[in-house]
Length: 158
Image (cartoon, rainbow, N blue to C red; front, side):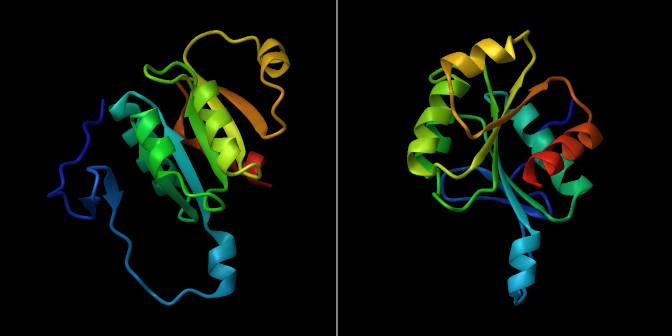
């Protein structure tokens, strides 16, 4: 299991609210650069999983910029409408489950795509009946390899 890096780790820093952020080297970006990069928001209450997903996605695809949270309430409070291309949300979380978080995030940005993750069994058809959100793209079973996750996310973003 990968432990989260500390704020002193090279290439990473903590933002104003304590979330681990990857240092990005600033360079002038062109319009085509902005369209190539895909912004992914990962929300999983297990900080090790959130961190591992973030690092795995960014290391597997240089065009993915991943922002991760281990608290759904903080993810909701910090959410930027019209910023993310895809939300990757754990279903079972304390404080607010993934479906409730998704509903609230979609009130802020109806156009963002959503994928849910769960280690448990889930009846996707039943979930789609209860939560008939057009933005729900896929359900991902945990555990999943970084390669399989990247392929799944790329397919959702196309």
